[in-house]
Each structure stands twice: as structure tokens, then as C-alpha cells.
Length: 402
Image (tube, rainbow, N blue to C red; front, side, top):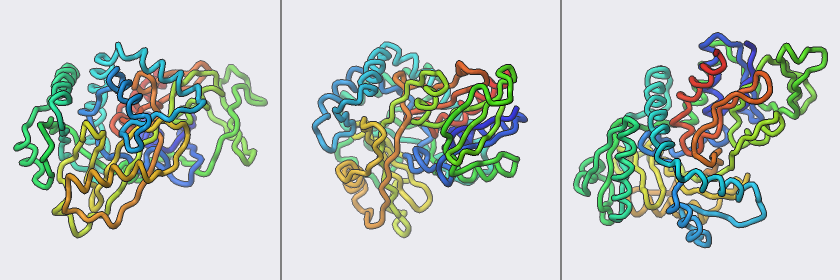
């Protein structure tokens, strides 16, 4: 089948790979000049089944309200007249009762996806490391909750072990553990540079025959193209230069833009953009002072990944619509965290970034058939787009081939 994949981020490129491998004629269309220019550009870098816990909980709702007026809070809800946001939040709260079920399902998907990454893409360089991920906790309440999550993860097939501060120091000798009461260790997980992976996988896809149309913004999706019967289930896409592009089917992998595209195609795609920030710190020449394992600070909601000669530090969740502004008051907590826990690192050379996570109210990716003929969706992966990408790309390919 001649298919157009809309979006050249991590989801779109991995989807194109599996579709081409299954024998389809594939073109990837993106409005940007290169792959992985938006949410897939500089995320936290973790391939993390141990971060599969969905965010749906009353404690997170209370924290969001409490932190609303704190400039450097990990979770920031900006109050405005964006009614889509409040509708999404109501749907988010309605899904709290499904948190355990969805966490267990996500854990299984994440583990299988990481396995696929390591087997299917073993020939692709993306500064990958199977270094494991260590969660650290600063109070007993968070540690008790972590033990509960460990039980949920176990039901999903994931083993992680509790470690004391001495073991934290043993696994990561460079970290300052003065305020740590304990941690959790997951050896199955790892890290990788999502942007480098996307670029190199796109090159591999091109060598397989996948076409990429960059700088191409689609203005309209026509269900019944001129001169073609609706029964033929063909699509005519018109770009901003008024060129017509013809395909037999569409696979929407457009991240936060999937909602708008879905509306044009008659589908409700309940995605809201949640902004996250990162800094990439140049650690060349001072690698001995940088962490060797990947970390997640559960209280600060900050993750770290060492990617070659860079330390990626990422975190925060900000509900502010499509706003991509990089705010110094959101970057500062990331830098201060590094200064506190890795005091010997010099932070002179770093690059800040902000991206929008495509979040669904139940924190589950949308992998489904659309209402219109030959339309499919693979989107809404939230904070686990990198982790879940291989699994859902294979899943949507199987759905298309049914």
C-alpha cells in the first residue's frame, strides 16, 4: 500500500521503518527541514520501563494546585482561558481509577519496546548504553510509594530492587547523597540520544526506499479526491505550495499536532501539549565527574543521561498550550540540581531546550484506526515516546496489515 506517514519525529520514523519492512511504499512528510526537530530533539534520553507509572493520581492533582504559584515547581499549571486544557484535566482525573491497570500495561509495552530497540536497531549508533536507571528518594513517604510501584511493575514483568544510600553511592560514586533516604535500581533500562537515533534511522529508511518530504506543510486532507472514487480509499493531500500528493492511506504520527489533524479527519484525539525542559551540558574533559548511570530524582522530577561527551538533564511539566518559550526560571532548577548532586562538574558550556509532550488523559498512546477509510493513528506517547516508539510502530503496522 502507498502510505504517507505524517510526522518525522521518533514515532513517525520508527513507524516508517516497520511499514517499509512489511512491504509498503512509504513517504514521511514533515513541516520541518530535518527529522526529530520538535519533541524528539533533546528529551531526557532514558529508555525507561521503570518510569512507566502513569501520572493519574490525586497526589499529583494536589501538587499541581499547590505548585501553581511557585516559579520553579516541577509541575506548573498556568491559569488562562484555554478550555481544552481544563477539559483534558477533567478527563485526566476521571482516569485516576485506572492508574494501576494502565501502569501495568505500559510496563509491558515499555519492556518489549526496549527489547525491540536493542535487537531491531542494533546496527544504529545513538550513544546507547545499557547502564541501568537508578531512582533516588529524599523522604520516606516517596520511598513507600516507590515500593508500591515496584509491586505494580512486577505484575507487568519488570524487576527492580530497592537500594540503600550506601548502595546508591556504590553504583554512582560521584553523586552527593546527603539528602537521599533510599533508591530503586532497574538494570534492564538504559539511555540513548533520541535525535541521533532518529537521524540515523531516517538514513537507514532512505536506504530501504522510504521517501522523506521535509519542509512540507499539509494544508488540507481530501477524503474524496477529484477524479478518484471514494471506494478506492485514496487520499489527496495539498501542501502549502498547492502541490497535490496522492496516497492510499495516512498514518498520523504528528505529536501535539495530531489533535488538529484528527479534527480535520473527523476523529477526536484527546492530546494536550505538556512542556518539558532539558539542558545538554558539555562534559568533555571532565567525564570523571559525571554520572555513569542514568538517574531519576522522584521528588524534583528530574532525569539525567550521559550521552557521549554530554550530560542531558531534563524535567518539569508545564501546562501552557503550544508555548515553546525557554524560560530561565524553568532551566535554573535543572542547573541547580546538577550543582547540588554533582558539585565537581563545571557548567560553563550548556544548551537549553524545551519541547511539547503529546499527552493523553489516561497517559496511554493512541494506536488505532480512524473513522475515515485508510487512516491510522500512532501518537500521544507523552513522556514515554522514546521508550514506547518501537513497540507502537510495530503495533500500528500489524493493525494496517490485518
